[in-house]
Amino acid sequence: MIQGKLDPDDVGAMEWNVRSFMPDVIGDLKELIKIPSVAFPGYPGEPVLRMAAATVELLRRYGLSAARLLDIPGGYPLVYANLPAPPGAPTVLFYAHYDVVPAQREDGWDTEPWTPVIREDGRLYGRGAADNKSGIVTIAAAIRALSGTCPVGIKVVIEGEEETVGHLESFASTHPELFVCNMFIITDMGKVMAGEPVLNTTLRGEASLIVTVRSLARAIHSGVFGGPAPDALIALIRMLATLHDERGDVAVAGLSSTLWSGAEYPEGLYRHLSGLLDGVDTIGTGTIGSRLWSKPSVTAIGIDAPAVRDAKNILIPQASAKISMRMTPGADPDHEIRLLADHLQAVAPWNVKVEISDAGGSAGFICPTGGHGYELAKKVMELVYQRPVSETGAGGSIPLMNVLHEIVPDAEFVLWGCEDHEHSQIHGANESVNLGELERMIISQALLLQKLGIPPA
Image 1 (cartoon, helix red, strand yellow):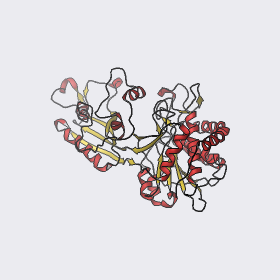
Image 2: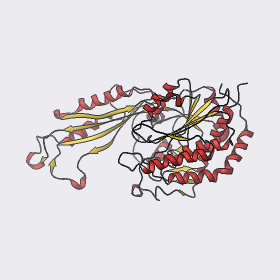
Image 3: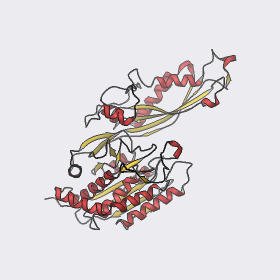
């Protein structure tokens, strides 16, 4: 049911069409960037709700008049649109998110993070420019490019809690009819470098826990009591040091691990893009692709202990760390978390008291490939970018993917987007999107919709 033919003349016509209204797209993306839609607990809710309303208004202006907000119990509203399919045509569901991570000038931004700026490098800077407000405008613009004659059914799902503890997974499970489609197009992805056509085929899972170590009833003088009494922070440091072996591989016994067999990530490019300092080694064994996309990784992302400026000559009675783990696609998160927790309990020195809390995670995702729609997406990208398409993994996680696959097991998936590892700096200072990449993704999505609507020969 999902197939179509494509030739270079189609690409040229769509390029001309999209370029005619790209100034509008860029202007609208700038307006979205200005809204500090941080959905983290403790941040004001008004900007998030304003962003949701602005997203609905944008979709309506670009051709989805039925766009509206749906209440999500316990969370921020879902932006939803549904354009029924013509008889016999497939339905495509687009996904993006309108929330962003926090940002402030003091984090290292060259300009105000909520003031969009286009620089001479052809990139638009501002929080959310790439992750994921670019996804929102590429969806809207792809619809506009079809000039009100969309040959397929369209559903749009844009959530407001992807960057924090969300509620969409449970909502989708209880309202599966809203998500039924023939193909999911996930616009919250990207590639190593702008200008490279990439389809993402796997996502690692994500898990985290907090480990707390107690050794003393209270803080005590390090001179009077230091020596026989164990310091909780030292005990915690010893425990954290066991999470990796001497080569840098994760040393938690039993964790799932596979070899990556897709396109490779050159080590020199990885060193450059990651900002590794001169002389600092990469850690772990195997290819860079395996270490990034198919093997587990463990990181201590926060420690509760006295700050250096507040240091006193005491033995510390309690210390905590938050541990983040990325898991092999397809691994059971409950099993992997249990292995991590058991490891930390087992390596605790001196019989200190150990408590594991806030443990939870989400499974990775293995994209079903090889279907008509997936292959057509590859052909579209190849012609738009004029280069062969690479299939790569992604180190990040989108918990919703497995829920969607369970709801509609026969649907195809296309995972792509405007983000690039080289310059986008998602979640960091000076986040940006390449404007040429923005245009190429709009053209790719519009052409894919156009060709998906062609009946089988």
